[in-house]
Amino acid sequence: MFTGIVQGVAQVVAVHELEEFRTHVIEMPPSMREGLEIGASVAHNGVCLTVTAIEGDRVSFDLMRETLRLTNLGDITPGEFVNIERAARFGDEIGGHSMSGHIIAMAKVVAIEEAPNNRRLWFSLPQKFGRFVFEKGYIGVDGISLTIGDVRKSAGESVEFCVNLIPETLSRTTLQDRTLGSQVNIEIDPQTQVIVETVERILAQ
Image 1 (cartoon, rainbow, N blue to C red):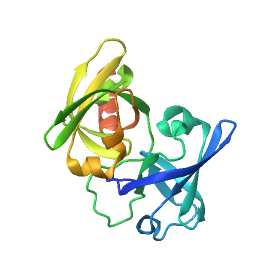
Image 2 (image 1 turned 90 degrees about the vertical axis):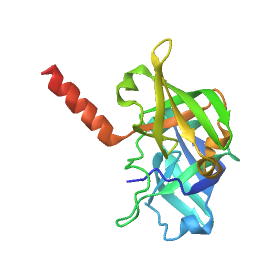
Image 3 (image 1 turned 135 degrees about the vertical axis):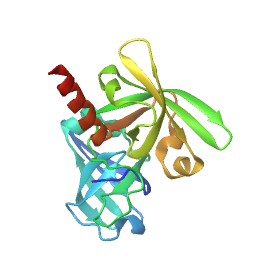
Image 4 (image 1 turned 45 degrees about the horizontal axis):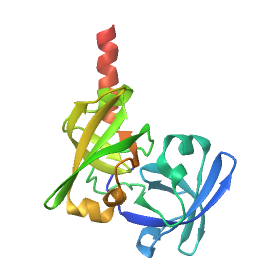
């Protein structure tokens, strides 16, 4: 389980490609590596990955075909950064919301609104996930626990929603570097998904 409170960013320093499979290696600072072992779970841009090797400050993770298809990690190249969160431990403070690290889709940045001391990003998400997206609901964007500011319909088979970002979030995460057209990983709040699907099932009956 993760909380969506990103602990920082880490640079991808190497990518090893195989057919429909890749290993990427990140450089993790000592504070993030404390107690880290092979087999541990670490979220990269919200994607739950398993540690496969540790060599000093370099930590390796394997990405399978489904991960490459559903997430933006397949487009990462050496030198880029990813949001990092270690798996939550019993007794940790849950400052965001419960997240599983399972990405349902990617969303595209369609508008950026700048204001003093904050930034608003608008994203376009496939319409089939629109029923889980509503004002003041929780959503995971590249592994960051955020509150949806507003939702609006758009042309075509998509729904648009926005999040408001404070300077702390921008300084600690990769969202500061997202531009128009950037793809971000989306995780719907699991509780919201269960409630919506339960209500839909009851109404259908």
